[in-house]
Image (tube, rainbow, N blue to C red; front, top):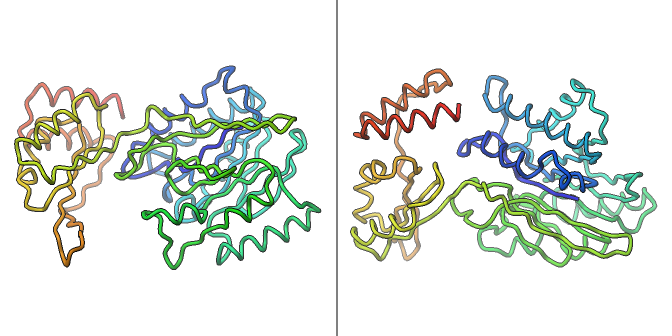
Length: 369
């Protein structure tokens, strides 16, 4: 089996086509992919609600068609779980629409409810737990126990979930809010024979037989760890093994700490860490708000025009570090496929970027759009 979650297609920061290209590379139409019996997409296929004129929609539909064809040709079952409501918005129904249009005869199911499925040809029972299902983790688990009773089961073979376990909630950056729900890891381990796969937290981790595959790509700063998906095997003799498959094409988000460096040292550190990064990598500079590098961001952008630069100025307030956000406002411009080249070239000229770099930028943009 393979499990992918938190793909977040339509994310405003990341190019949708780049994520889809990496997905195509992760599941090509070849014999290795054909070894899979089943593929699970464990929630957050989408990042936000998309409207039809959005260019990402056609890219997503074409990716779905390719994936469904590979699954059909290679006899791979496909299950898609609804993730966080504010991300997915039930848009994975598009899979069903594509199947109707193509008439592909594959074993597919789009799961939107807390449920247990017996997959006959694999002889396995699978528990599905969408995100934000119950009013609490305990409430959700009470419903799970009732489902087991209704299905005359004491255990299922696998659980596919979207949410957060208690062990993840102990991490500082995932401290639960008053509205968040954490699941009891031991309670689920007691009712699942083999593996529990869970999406939502973007960091890959394991706890006993619980596997959080993490997000497929990097989507923001603070996510510098490897990204990818998980593959697992379980034999008839109950021998288990799982593997984290890194997405080597994941976008780079890198933070450079310049707090204790002067301007010259900062520039040297930036040069050392930036040169060799893939095009359109995102680099964030972290330093005190008064650091001179923040007065030289335009020059930095001219030196490395194919890097996406942001800054994280910090100031000490009451012994606590507060992030000072700099927001620039301008009149809204509708950026379209037809005018983006003109707008970008105009901005590059005003920024003083030389002609050769502008032409290179235009060539790269043409390849992307």
